[in-house]
Length: 155
Image 1: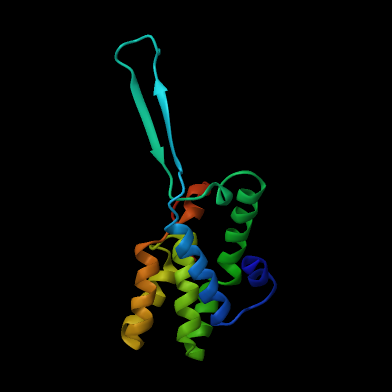
Image 2: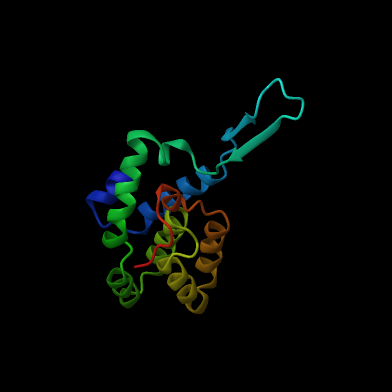
C-alpha cells in the first residue's frame, strides 16, 4: 500500500521512512529462500549438489508482483530518483526526505546507485545522525531491481 501511495503522490519523509523500515525488515527476513538440487544421476555414488540462496523475496521478482515491481522501479528512476529531483531536494534542504528516499533506493537499486551515493556524501557533511541511519540501510540493502534483468543503474 505504501508503494501505491508513493506512485500517486510526492510524499514527505514520513511515508519514505515507513517504506524504508518495511524494506529493512524484508532484508532481514529469515524465511527459507534457499533451494537445493541434485546434479547428476541419483544412482551415481558421487552425487553433486547445487545450492542457492536469495535474499530477495519471490514477491519482488516472480509472477505478476515481480513484473509490477520491475515496472515500478523503472518508473521511479525518473519520478523519485532523478538528478533534477535530488537537486530540488538539496536546494530545499529537506535532509530527512533525502535520507529516507536514499534508504529506499539502496534497497531497490543497490548501494552503488548514484542517488544513494550522492545523498550519502551530502549527509556526511550536513547531518551525521541521518547519515548513520542511511548507513544502516546501505549495509542491509537488497538491491533487488538488479536481479530483474538490470545491471548497473544510474540516473
